Image 1: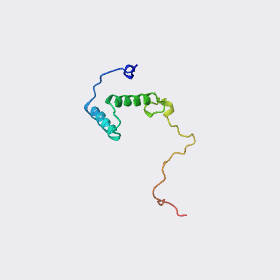
Image 2: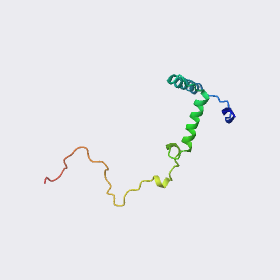
Image 3: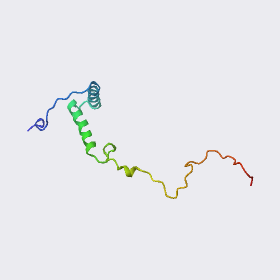
Length: 99
């Protein structure tokens, strides 16, 4: 039984920019090691496998479940004093009685 019997053959259409990227990637891989002969199918299969692993991985940022709205609300402390949350940038004299 050959390896080709384990694969499904499909035909895809790529936009010109993706097609050029795949061809450049093939040339880069073959230039790194002249003994290596790769195919466009292998490059596309690797890209799809990477995408599949990211989709199945729960710790990727793009696939995290959104938190509930109540979890995103920041509640101030009950004894919060209010006022400015930043320190003044320059010391200034206060008007009034001198001490």
